[in-house]
Image (cartoon, rainbow, N blue to C red):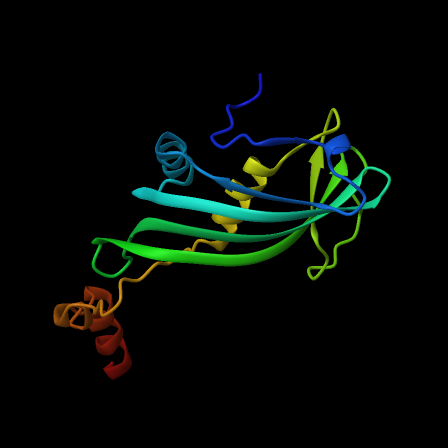
Length: 166
């Protein structure tokens, strides 16, 4: 059984002309809510992505994209929720499932496998959003409380001092 896809935007491979195809997608409020749940963040207020799809070789499509989103994150310092903008440019390659390259080059384009002659640029958008999210979001002007630096001494530290004296 396949997990449900929160943002499904299929594009048939045979619909992409040799000159390329530009497509823009926007997530609905329900899709934004589902994506927030998937990414375990307080909210996705908006999400849009513009794709420029261009056939490269038989069955391989290069996609250059520009993603824009407004998300709600929890600050790692204050634990307060705050809104932040996400903007990301990316380039990926859609390849037939089972034909992914073995290239371990971190600078190579990411490959997204597809089946049945249909690319899911919605799922590609969701994946790019997840990659663009800061793993340690910090609200602007968030500061550690003064008490955070005053950690009480461990009882073991006192024992270590006594051992060094003796």
